[in-house]
Image 1 (tube, rainbow, N blue to C red):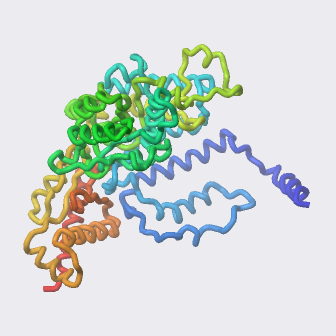
Image 2 (image 1 turned 180 degrees about the horizontal axis):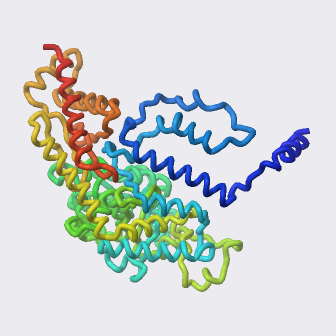
Image 3 (image 1 turned 135 degrees about the vertical axis):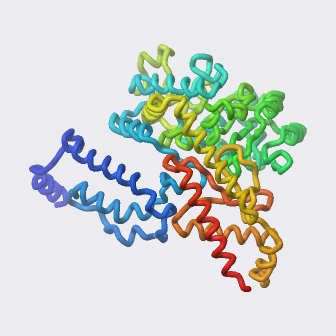
Amino acid sequence: MGSLTSDLELKYNSGSFTNPLDSEEFRRQGHMIIDFIADYYKNVEKYPVRSQVEPGYLQKVLPESAPNNPESMETILQDVQQHIVPGITHWQSPNYFAYFPSSGSIAGFLGEMLSSGFNIVGFNWISSPAATELENIVMDWLGQMLKLPKSFLFSGNGGGVIQGTTCEAILCTLTAARDRVLNKIGRENISKLVVYGSDQTHCALQKAAQIVGIDVKNFRAIKTTKSSSYGLSPDILLAQINSDVEAGLIPLFLCATIGTTAITAVDPLKPLCDVAKQFGIWVHVDAAYAGSACICPEFRHFIDGVEGADSFSLNAHKWFFATLDCCCLWVKDPRALVSSLSTNPEYLKNKATESKQVVDYKDWQITLSRRFRSLKLWFVIRNYGVANLRHFLRSHVNMARLFERLVSGDKRFEVVFPCHFAVVCFRVSPLPVLMDKLKTKYENCLLSEEEQINEFNRGLLESINASGKAYMTHAVLGGIYAIRFATGATLTEERHVVVAWTVVQQHLEAFLSAFKP
């Protein structure tokens, strides 16, 4: 009976059925979506930056089951506006200063749109030659913009691939490094392999180490200090490696970071690579955030020494105006990736692959299927040009410098960590007059003075974010709770920075006025 019912439904609905890819209907609905998004960008400044909804809000307003009959795009978009938009934290808002930016652009958006329109599954060259070859070309373009050594480019003996995220880039390179060593010493020795980073390295390294089978006892998150500006010390790294070698362990992989997540600290590449070279350690450079800035000559020095690394990655979806996801990974020895990640089932065999004259990107990544990501990067680079891209990046850095000056001009605040790029870490200062008031506020709590000022700044940040007028996040380093102010949203202008600072001051004044006299 179930089958008969389904047949009757199909017969009943067949007269009004529209092909899901009807070109004219696509044109009509596509215009609606473009208009909706354009209006969203036009009005995004008016929304609370951080979503104000409570957990489970959406389940209360949407039906419990899927509709049996079709609903119009107009009706769906009404629900998007009414129910979805309130549950979005607006990463494209000019008042968004949290985490790192997810910088968008017209070119990046349209490139993504075209990629979705073509909807290819580009696992190897033959599945869409243009997708593979454009990626080869664009990755060499961007590598040249960064002045990467030729050994990282297809025009040398290396090459680039667009991964989804840094997590994937680190996982792929760590897998290649693991297999390169185990093929020499035997896979039974995997428990001896050691992975190195700092206590500021992104957690993606720890996750990748877990996935590839590194013993948790052999993961080294080396402590950084204020004396080294929270960069990884080559001397401390060397001492740790020597200790591990003496214990019979095998140093495998080092992840150096340009622009750490917490405070954008920079690891010194050249001396770290020199240490790693002594032990045959694979060095990966994670420049997910700050790498984009290195197309500007004044920032290029931050990656000096990259010639000693084995791989390098940056996220073009963070600060290079391409939409998520677009992690650009370069390797000196693509054969190491291919050796670890390749598969060659019968159903994928073809003359182009067998000729060994083409790149099959399925063998450079974890997944088989992949999207046409290079289109959006190609669009961004061509539509804006290198000169304009540098201008955009510099404008964000200048806005961060403006905010830094505003903070420094108010004696109630202090900048607590160096500002290398476009992130300012600041806090309310532990001034004597404030500490006297905090002692009253926390008189029944067993908190040290440092803990008291940390709690005060934590409360201030939550108050700012709850207002919806700006959104910032925090970092804790060296026992100091700092508020992070990250410029880089494409729509942000200097006036937004000034307003954000005013919001911070207003909330501080409200906090201070709430204290007992």
